[in-house]
Length: 141
Image 1 (cartoon, rainbow, N blue to C red):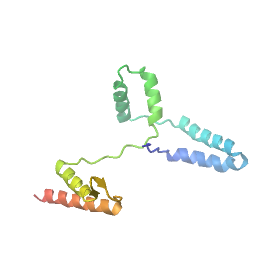
Image 2 (tube, rainbow, N blue to C red):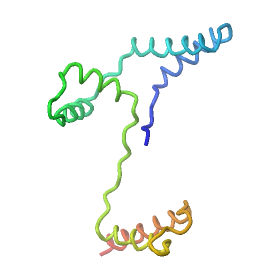
Image 3 (cartoon, rainbow, N blue to C red):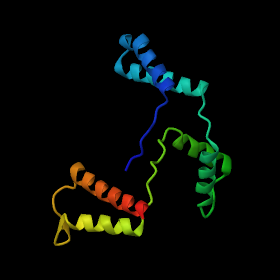
Image 4 (cartoon, rainbow, N blue to C red):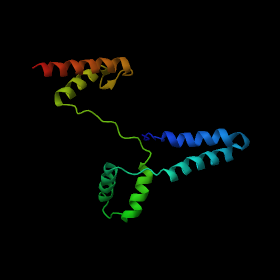
């Protein structure tokens, strides 16, 4: 699964402005080159600084190697790789009871151990309602 890339709004604006100012007079190859130069020029003037959380994650990633790479090179390359990645969405914790509800719900859509049809948004909505009802019941106790 590929990760979602987030482009800063000001970087997009620099690329779009370049496209409109110079784009019409250039070949496609030169247009792409010019737009990328504008975007990277914006980045050079406005470096994206890693947060303390980003730094902590990179330190942990480096420590996972049996023979960690040389630190400055590793961090430079790793930050270059990470700086435009969208943050991972928070995944709610599922209790054992909720897992049982999910498993029972999924079994309704199985025949001989195989899923029957697609579990679409409407069906997923039913599951969400069931879980919310369970949670409300627990909170009421």
